[in-house]
Amino acid sequence: MKRMMRVKSAGNLTDACEEERILCYKKNLAPVPAVGHLNQAKVLYSTCIQPASAVKKSTRHIPQHPERVLDAPDFKDDYYMNVIDWSSCGVVAVALSFTLYLWNADTGEIQLDENNEMNLITGVKWSLDGKFLAVGFRDGSLKVAIKGVLSWRGAVVSAGYQSGQIIHHDVRVSQHITGVWEGHDREVVGLHWSHNQTKLASGSGDNTVRVWDESRLGTNTSESLFVLDEHVGSVRAVQFCNFKSSLLATGGGMQCKTIKLWNVNNGELLKSIQTGSVNGIIFNRDYKEMMSAHACGKLIIWKHPNYAEIAKLSGESALLVFFSEW
Image 1 (cartoon, rainbow, N blue to C red):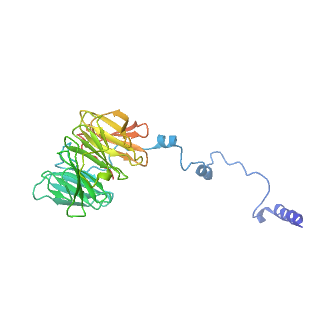
Image 2: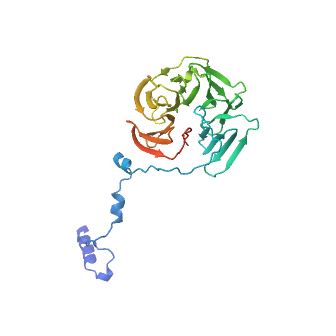
Image 3: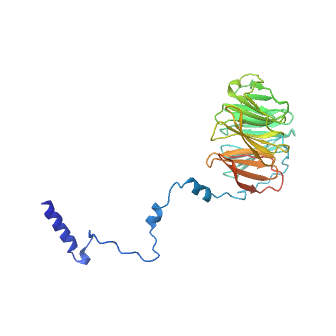
C-alpha cells in the first residue's frame, strides 16, 4: 500500500502541467547560476564567527589619533604628582593647580570644586566602585585621604608619602588610620593594589619596588614580602596585571628607562625591556596587552606573553606625565 501511494504521489507531481506545479521533487540539479552571482548564504556561513588568533592580529585596528582632546590650563608638570584619574562610572577627575574638575565622559558635563585656601592638589584617586574620590594636598590636609600617591582597596585608601611611609585610611570611620607601613628610604611615587586585593606594590625614589601582603593591613610594619631592586632610577609606574594575578609590571624613570616584569609569588624577575622613561603602565584584559606611557609623549602597546612591541602612538608634543584608564 505504501509503495502504491509513493508511486501515485510521484506521478501526480511529475505529470502535472507546468503551471500547476507547486513543488517538484525530481532529481534534476539546480540550474547553473549566472557568472558573477553572489550566494549570500555561502558568504554568511563561510565566515568564521571567532577567527583564529592569527587573523585577529592581522585585522585589529589601533587608532593613531586621540578620540578627544580637552584643554587643561595650569596642568602641573611634576613627576611626583598624580592629578588625573578615571572612575568606573565614567567620570574623569583632573586637578589643575588649586581646582578640581570632574568631567562626565557620557554627558560632557563639567563640575568644579574650587579650593579657596589656595592649597595645591597633588593627587586624586577614585575608589573601585566610583563612589569615593580621594584628594591629596601639598600641605597634608585632606579630603577623604591625605596628600600623596593613592590606591584603593575597598573602603580603605592607601596613601604614599614623601617620608617613604604608606598609611592606610578607612573612610568609614572617624579614627581612619588603620596601619602604617615603613620601608622606603625616599618618597613613595607609585602605588597599586592588585586586582584580587591581596598585594600592594609601591614604587619609590629610592629605586626600589616593595610588594606588601594584605594580611598586614591593620598593623604597623616594615616587613614587605619582597624588595625588588633591579631598577637604577626612581620607579613611578607600578601596575598589577588584570588578567594574570601573579604578574607585576614596573617602569623606571629617566635614569633607568626600563620596564620590568615580575612574578610576585616568588619575586622573580621575568623580563626587562629597554625603553624610554616610563610614567605609567596599564593592562588590557580583552586583547591581553600592556600599554606604557613615556616622557617623550608616546604610548607603546606590548603583546602578552612575549611583550613584543606591536604599536607606537604619538599625540603629545610635550612631556606625557599623567596616564589613566577607564
